[in-house]
Image (cartoon, rainbow, N blue to C red; front, top):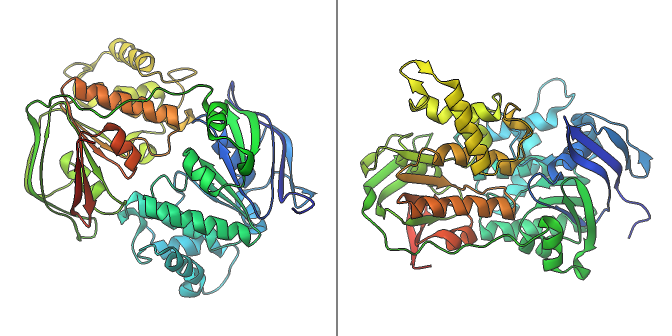
Length: 472
């Protein structure tokens, strides 16, 4: 092992208003290691990473880079030093192409004419090595969320990355892609990089990490070497208790709530995304749809929810709820408060008063009830929804969608990026919706999630059914 860590974090504390996101946290990150930072949503993992990468400034504490003091610096300065970060919520310019986004990240102070192909050549090589199908000429906003995540990873790996931070990089990848990414991360560490990984899935962590740091409620709970770590002990340090586990919904289904015949849907660039799908979903049933991201899942969900045009036939009930896969871009108005986001459902659907008159007392009572019912951890309901952890943001989305008691629920990767307890909470709500008579369509790239909830499962490949499982 080298004599000193590549990056040393010493007694870092960070508050957001009265909430302590980090309290006196100290961690060393060594070259040649994959170091996993574990914890529930709201444990402080992303806050710590954002401090390390310069996106947030700590209230107190210090950092050292290669044994020398590292003063608070903006992200571009730290990027040039070799600290690169792949964010869970993407930092891409939607209207620009993949190639332009990668080049933009590498321009810095470049003057004069830029040879785009030369700049993006390292990213192309890495994409080929990973066997990722990425259209470098496509505008980012036309790509599925899983492909956008790959672009973020390529962007970071294409530049200086002596210390590479990845915030939930496997959340949108299928099992084969996860295995390949694990191999790449091990190779990067073998080249002498420090690879820092935020993750929730302990199986993945134990497959790739050399060292683990566990955070809980902003506190450093312990550090373990993988060779000496026990998975159950690490899980207990993360959550403090074993979360309840549910079972697939197996009750007797009721009448047909959703009937789809010969459904075809086009993608944003006119390509065939869904091809001649036919299926039914009954009341009380959870119908699981799996597959690697980018095989028509997003387009299918949007067509079922009435948000995208299609050919074929869809028969659905009047009250439909969609839980989108990107809570920040598609599920929340980040500039509004927690209670205002909860109000959006009743306001939009005419349940907030009489005619044009809004009853704010009724709205506030409803949002307070939702906060209590769904266990949303808030300081004040008037706080910005952006101040919540990812798990609590997702609870706001779920509360607003399911609060209308929809007869059809479409959930697209509803637990992406959530910790074990937050994910199980979402699962409980979907089970409850099915038990109450809703038909639930669960579209997920997480096979464990599908197996835990679904009455039956189909798999999408290039917009068509590839395989099915019943009675899982």
